[in-house]
Length: 189
Image (tube, rainbow, N blue to C red):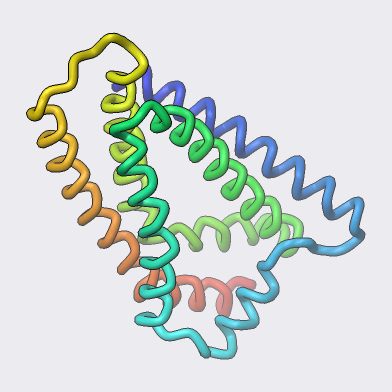
């Protein structure tokens, strides 16, 4: 798994760098902030979003991607999807950090990190394990690996556990993170 973690980290880092550069170039090109950060913060300040509303929206949006990746794991398309997913997650992380840094300075880094707390404690391991098992299963289609029923059972077993961890992360993001983020914004920004 260590070699996978190194590759995952490098892909994430590549996407992160591209996210930082794109955010900087778009700001200098457009002359103003081109992200949805202001809309998100204004919506949060108005208090118009409930925890259950956030949970349902996140469950719907991320659940579709979860199922797509889950199914792709038993096809040869799992590896390219994981590579693209890592680049995209890195891009989003770099963009978010840069937006907060440009808007709020050094204090913005703390606010950006607050966006990932506490759900990041569950998302990071669940996404890493999720991608690892998808790559493991998908590799059997790229090589001459033999697929047996036990492989599919183990895959579904581990994906069920990862799905539960992922649901816990969604719950934390929906109900706990909004309180943490509101506290950080009110006190420090």
